[in-house]
Image (cartoon, rainbow, N blue to C red):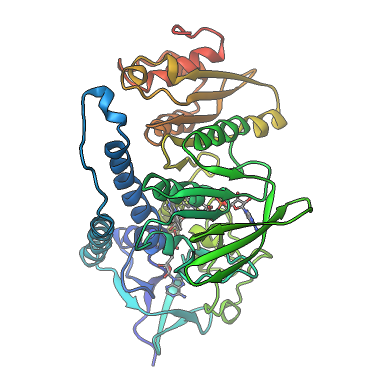
Amino acid sequence: MTNTPYDLIVIGAGPGGYVAAIRAAQLGLNVACVEARETLGGTCLNVGCIPSKALLHASELYHEAQSGDLAKFGVEFKGVSLNLDQMHAEKSKAVKELTGGIEFLFKKNKVDWLKGHAAFTSASTIDVAGQSYSAKKFMIATGSSVTPLPGVTVDQKVVVDSTGALALPKVPKHLVVIGGGVIGLELGSVWGRLGAKVTVVEYLDQILPGMDGEVRKESAKIFKKQGFEIRTSTKVTGVTVKGAKATLTVEPAAGGASETIEADCVLVAIGRKPNTDGLALDKAGIVANARGQIEVGHDFQTNVPGIYAIGDVTPGPMLAHKAEDEGIAAAEFIAGQTGIINHDIIPGVVYTHPEIASVGLTEEEAKAKGEVKIGKFPFMANSRAKTNRDTEGFVKIIADAKSDRVLGVHIISSLAGTLIAQAAQAMEFGATSEDIAYTCHAHPTHAEAMKEAAMAVTGKPIHM
Ligand code: FAD
Ligand code: NAI
C-alpha cells in the first residue's frame, strides 16, 4: 500500500538533504526525508567534517601544551598527558549534539523522517523498509562513500578508511596514509600531533591535487617541517596485514623497483565515490554518468523531470557547503522560485595547521584563460601574525590583468578558513583588487594581509 503522497521526498539527510528538506518545508511544502543511518546529518556530521574538526581542535590543543611551544609566551606545562578516550568522548558528544539538533529542526519544520534505505520502484514511488511512499517530486542527496583501493582490504583495525581513522583506540607508532589529499593531511595531522610518525604516499608528483601550484609546494614544505614524510610519485601495489602490523609494497608511479614500508596503521584516503548503489535508479529511468555521478541541469533536475539531485552524488567538489547551497537552491526551484548558487565561487578549506584555503581560479587555471596580475603578501610581514608568532603562509590574489576583477584567492594561515569568506564575498560582488585594497581593515588583524595582497596586485603594499 502506498502512503499519502508528499510534495517532496528527499533521499539522504546529509548537509545537502537535510537543508533542502527544511528549506522546502519553510516554503510550504509537505516534505519527508529518508535516512538509512541511525542519526541525521550524513557523512559530514557523523563521520566527516564534525568529528574530524573535533579531533583536529583537540589534538592541536594537546600538541600546543605538550610540545613546549607556549613556553615562549610564559605558559609552561608540566606532566601533560593524553587521555585519548576523553578526546573521543568529547568528539562523540559534539556529533551527538549536532545530529540531535537536526532531528529537532525536522520536528520544528514538520519534516517527516522516513527511517531506512530508499529504493525507487518507479519515477514517482520509493520503497523504504518495506513501505511504499509516493511524492510529486524527489531529491536524491545520497552523498558519497570512500573509494576502495583494489587489493587493499579495509578492516578498520590495521587498515582503516577515514571513519576508522576518526576512532583509533590508540595512537599508532607509524601511520601510513595512502593519498596526499584533504583527508590524508587532516587526519595525518591529528595522529601526528598525538605522537605518530606519519608517512604520506601520493601517486601524483605533488600533494593536494586541484589546488594552486604555489600553495601545493608551500604546503608540502610546511608538512615536512612538521615531521610528515611525503613520498610523491609513488604507488602502493599491495598491503599485507599480519597481526597488528601492515607491510605496504610501494614502487615509483612511473614503474621501477619496489620496496616495503612497515606500519601499524594504514589510512586509505584516495577519494570518494557517489552513493547510488541500491537506489534502483533504473526503475525511475535515471542514468548515472561514467563516474557514477548523477548529472543535473541548472535547476538540479536529473534526466527525469521531477527528480532532482544535489551534493556529493552530483559532479563538482565534494564539500558540505556546496551540498547545502545546492539543497537550498533546488528546494527553491521546486517551490517555484529561482534558486541561486555560483559554482565558480565555492571556497575550500583544509583544516590543518596552518589552514589552507582557496576560492576561485588557481594561478594555472587563470593564466590558461588570459592575462593576470598577482599580488602576494606574507604573514611574516603582518603585524598581528608576527605578534602571535604565527607567521607561516601568505595571501595570494589573482586578478584579471585588464579589468582587475578578482579571479582567485589562496591563503595559507592559521586563520585561512575564516579569512577566505571575505574573498568569496568580494568575488561574489564582482570586486576588483582595488576594491579590496581600499576597504578599511581593522588593525591589528590577519585580515590586513588580504588588503596588502590586494595592494600588491598593483605593486604597492605598505609593509613590504
Ligand atoms: P552525505 O553527507 O554523504 O549524506 C548522504 C546521506 O544519505 C548519508 O547519511 C547516507 O546514509 C544517506 N543515504 C545514502 N543512500 C541512501 C538511501 N538509498 N536511502 C536512505 N539514505 C541514504 N566537507 C566540508 O565542506 N568541510 C569539511 O571539513 C569536511 N570534512 C570531511 C571530513 C571527512 C573525514 C570526510 C569523509 C568528508 C568531509 N567533508 C567535508 C565532505 C562532506 O562530508 C561531504 O561533502 C558532505 O557530507 C556531502 O553532503 P551530502 O548531503 O551530499 O551527502
Ligand atoms: P582527495 O581527492 O582530496 O585526495 C585523494 C588523493 O589520493 C589525491 O591526491 C590522489 O592523487 C591520491 N591518490 C589516488 N589514488 C591513489 C593511489 N592509488 N595511491 C596513492 N595516492 C592516490 O580525496 P580524500 O582526501 O579521500 O577526500 C575525499 C573528499 O572529501 C575530498 O574530495 C574532499 O572534498 C572531501 N573532504 C573535504 C574536507 C574539507 O573540506 N576540509 C576534509 C576531508 C574531506
